[in-house]
Length: 151
Image (cartoon, rainbow, N blue to C red; front, side, top):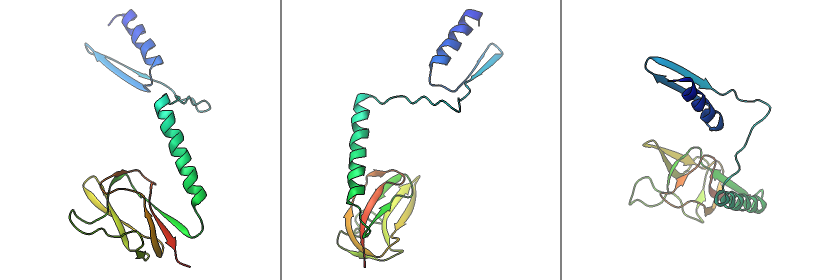
């Protein structure tokens, strides 16, 4: 590798989003590492279509928070995975809208890495809404259920 090619690689690396690059050629290895600036963080602005999605999600989240009261409890996903309303296909859902639940009762299953994880209620009350469809992927801390707490 000649000096001009090395300079070209360094220029490309500096303008890229990579933080580290290691190249080995003909027994010669070199490694480039960018130091993260602690005080300055450059945030890439979203693409126009991403911006619309972000704004829509923010508005939806703001509306849900405005609707929230002391009587409502949002059950959130404890992990990333796939949401299932029943323990296995063909079985009845674990809970339905309008059903009374108690603390510790299983509300749904989230599959993550082939492991079935039970999500339980932390409060007693009536299931007011189920916010996720069966088989839908869920994110960490995503709202799954709204439970109207008992008095």
